[in-house]
Image (cartoon, rainbow, N blue to C red; front, side, top):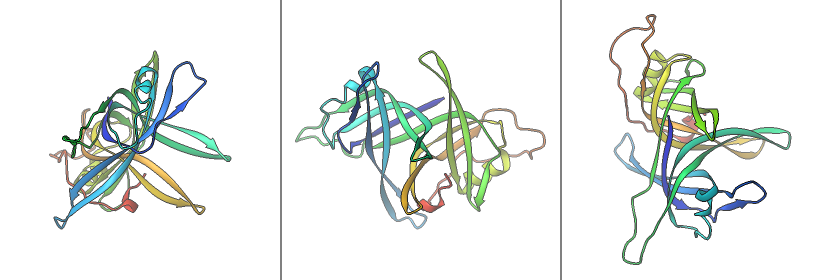
Length: 234
């Protein structure tokens, strides 16, 4: 499984690409997120989600204006490219379905922003815990697209109780279900701003049998989290 639902506002007009066999475009959606901190204080941030669309789905973005509310259902698509002799990595949602959500002067579609992704895949390596309360792993999600079997490698970060259980229970090769949000962090490299994108999990569950070597006992499927950008390990 590799399924995402994103609802957000178009940041700029979609960029269309010419020369391929079908229409293609890329655009960004601004998704507002609100939550409460550990001190019960309201917090708010905007996540910018990259989206790619092809064929008839892409054609729906013709003449769509900046600020328009857009619904996208699709899957996470990851990969790499070379720029200035440097390998760079990308994460985008490949749209399978797309809808423009109209607004009128009397009706404003507020608080509809959504950033949800669900994954099923196997761990490529044992989880890594860079510091207490944070555990990171990479998930290999297999999917069948246009006659081809593909594998998307998706970075997943867990926090607090989810992190402790992931470090204790998960290991390379285990089949895992993850629910979470697409999340991008900024970092500096050689004086230039770079971006890294993955999934911050708010729920996970192992789908295969627990190895005998691991201790038995119950574990929580979900846990709350409150983190800073620098804490995200991908």
